[in-house]
Length: 270
Image (cartoon, rainbow, N blue to C red; front, side, top):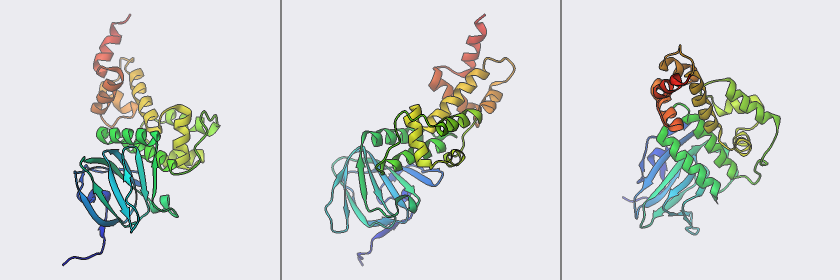
């Protein structure tokens, strides 16, 4: 027996008809990469959580109630408050998108909202890379990128090149404490909203909080390798890595060689 009642999607990983990867939880946010096959039709449904959909590749149409069915393509972010009933249709090309569960209050008082920008394209690409990378800094990096996306829903962006002292304080805290920390904690210590911190930090320093923290950590490890005493596992621990394999992966990406090879090389230098 058929019913007109919309389906309830409890979590983004259960997107109807999608092929999701394992989600990543970052602070209050849950991010899932999902793929929608060609010609997929999703019946009316709603999410219990407010969601952001970031289209990475392909395009799909979305119908809200009896309204028109706009088509959303790459670099588009669609924000839906919790309980928004909608249906979708995928065309002749498959769709890859990020589904981000956010606290209901993040989108409170707003209706369906769509934005398209170069910033969304960049943040979406960085999020996808973080989901593939999945190390112990990934939650911090993902949280910062989600906050940048949420900030894109507002009208006011932080001023480029801001020289406010609280931004320098946020940067100094990252330098002082090795290892990942929650972005919300960092924002609390400098007395700013996490969304504003995430956007202002990139505007001032040219990278997200997570990217900056990862660069600091691998540079800290490089400096430690110049000392003869610590083993590679000790270098990893002192630099803030969860294990030596994480250090090796990050070091190869940054310097094109393993930590052991780097240490042998510098020991040949008089």
